[in-house]
Image (cartoon, rainbow, N blue to C red; front, side, top):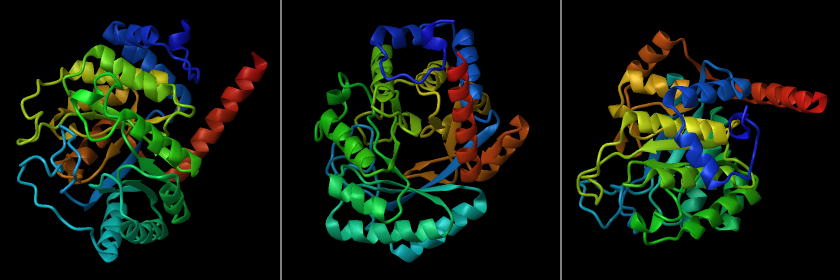
Length: 342
């Protein structure tokens, strides 16, 4: 079996290797992705997250896909930072609905000190409710990342969006290195990383390969890798972007699974418009995490009952944080034993 399909944990991928994975026959690619998925994860369990926008709109950045940019007229009304009590209530509802991780998103270039103190209290409240905590607040300094860690934050989300080469066509108000610097600050603080990208921005297959290569060659793989399909919001520069071939999207999921075997690959934005059959192919290709609930920040997400129905038909179940940890430790021990025997 080739090195590229072995499911080994690597940080030395080359672009030709990743492009070769994208070029595999579809059936072969999905087969190998499912095989690697089963070697590292419980095959029929999906991690469930809920995402709440705690501060909406009026962002000064110019991300071409984002309805929250103050530069675009998308009809989105800006909303100030929520009260801590409102976040506490939403977290309780998310837990009752079956979510195990509660993600808080705020439209910042980077958070102000006074807002970060309030967000730290939100994190403490969500943590005390028995949920894993995640935040996405824009760029962070090392000190800010440490403040969030001290408040009990588990995960920090900061996506790379696309390849370094295509990035400037989508965003000009912060650099790719700015994003990498935030990821480094988050890791240094001891936080887990949630980092992925978007398919459908007008990028090439090589750009998709370069994005996943960049993630896979980080010193540590992200624990969560959200793969988003562009949601074409009227008023944004990408409102008229071409549709993504659903099978090309599944390919991206499968390649992410092969490159980052232990990561949770999250089927993220754009899921509302995907058929049950396409979502099923994504799960077969190695996706094992979703956002669960009515909204994904400011765009729609499949209704909870639709998700429950699909899970029942597929025999999928929600993964608990304790089960996730235990499975990871067991699988890691098994791989270490196998490596010693070999």
